[in-house]
Length: 485
Image (cartoon, rainbow, N blue to C red; front, side, top):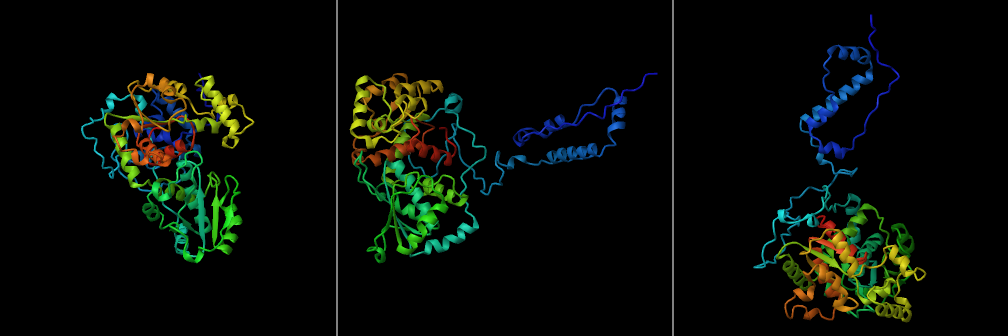
């Protein structure tokens, strides 16, 4: 008589760990089919297995776990309420947004009408290039902690400490320094005097803060975080401020307190220069939220800039989606980065000669060769390289492209590789009506702010170099609804 086969006790049970994202994508029926084994044709074999395994308490516990899991799924437990990849519960309520077929968020404050410029095509007619990224449930959240809000009362009412800052560079560098100045003032518990914009050596722009940014809006948005003053109070006008020029890169809040707190408490006024990239990017949550609040909510461009920028954006949107391309091909860019424009031997020699005459303009390391910079991805792309990249990304030939930036070295001829492949190529001069740009003609910061506005509203944005403006627009687009970059 044949002996029945027995199950070896040496075999160990194995478990598969399934990520929550996969569980989220499965229905309850799918999970049940994965977790519950199918019935076998022979009932005898089932009782034979049960005879040897059902006595184990591990089996009963595992069965109870499966029963409870399937029961929760059948009761409609919504696992999608947990944000993917986030170990923390989300504190901000979900708001309903109106999104058009290509994923743009409609701003209820926008008042520009496209008129008879035509309507955008339906999403069925648009290719993969225009597809917008999935935000995975992430959205802006600027809810500050109770401790932060409690400390705000005394900071906003303070009348003994004042921070003066002088910011330099182009408009994107100035924005970064203004953001850091507000956060540093918060760390020190000081009031911020409206930042002074240093006249740029290259562009010669003498614009003041209120010329470029909406000062009333800036004060209003930050009124619960820091005190903003248009000028020093009369009690401190004659005070000689403590001046600091040597702040190292990426300093922490602890370093700022240890270095500046005693001095500002004693003197009352602290003057900081050259804040570019001085404050660490790794800040406590409340200070990081303040940084986002300043950059993406408080620093709003002046009404005349927004009005014209919105008009140009609407003219681009009139016939469908558009790509904003930030080209950095100006003469000073090639000089500063230590790279060659690749146009001709004549232009390469021109840049090298300029670099020898003004070595202080070279911001990259002088001991790195052009080829090493190029291979490391530190050089801006020229028009030929941008064209190859767009074609590799499968940008349609009829794509409407808005190019932001100053006039490139070599003029229109330098852009010919792009315009041959993508003929629908425009900048602010092409879109503006006669006289619209005239008030801003000799103000580089105004022109850059208009480019910033049109680029922010584009369906796809691509920079030719990882500069300050490209990073600023990328952050703004992520904060405004995960627009394609």
